[in-house]
Length: 409
Image 1 (cartoon, rainbow, N blue to C red):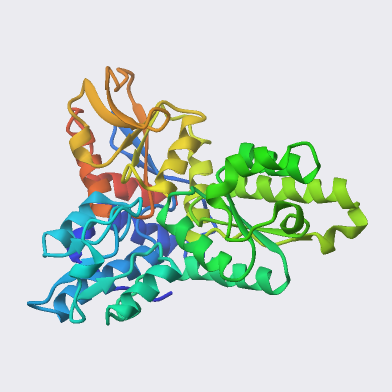
Image 2: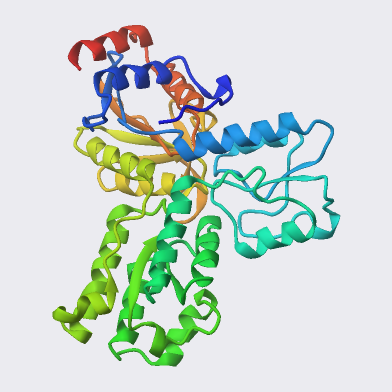
């Protein structure tokens, strides 16, 4: 796989060496067991797969190149390049400005842009309408296009569904940049609908089976339907794609559900005429990170630390998985480890920051899980590890912990 030229300060002395060690021992990534770094009184289980993925490294390389190639000119990011505050702050510190926020709210009016300005398309991609708007302003939207190839793969899948005259059901967060972009591409090719979760999928299924009145369906989904969408007509043939960072198990469950609905309505023998059996459209990094997190669930850990941007979809799903078994703390960086006694963390259920006391159990050795989302630099994970080590006495050095790991792999 291609390697990218990303700033060295995103790498780290411990985590990068750990990844190099695991890669040498398991080049085909078949071993999903976490890495155990044994520091004595602290044992840290680190996920087999985590951190920057192909799409993120590609986006970072292109974005920093855009800044270097346009000295003295204005450089804009359409919105956050990826959902990590440190990476976005690095770019804004170099003069890059955001045109809109993650919800699509305009921060810089279109009329203020000039043909010699540079606009970077984020890794999530963007809508057809925004691409066309940039072209009317004399700006090439594809010159610095960092759209992840795996997102584009989903768009291609949507195109094939459209060619097959299937309606496209998108499993995604309706306001997420990637889902908005995928909806735009899908709606250009076929009738399209966004469902956020299984609850919404079931509502659609109830309408398909005549159990939900049309007005109730439209009341719930009117803002997430392609123009001219006719529920009675357009829900007879469907296929499911997704926002690439959703939980694989959730997407598969939704696809299986719609297949069951079609079987019930039209008969199993007629399934091909009413349901497109699409393969999973999550990106490889999302799959690997989620699979590696299932490996973490097999450990006897005492708690989990998940590191990443609080608006990062793929990171939030890793938190959801860890919460199934461990006390789990979602932190953006090492600054959230306030002390050995208190931690500040993001609560997915209330969507707010909270502080928790006595978060570190007194037992020894203490077993802690550490992982991060696909948009989190290794350097941040390394800093979290170093701060955590500072809360313990008589710990082994990282070099000793890595040697112990190498001996058992």
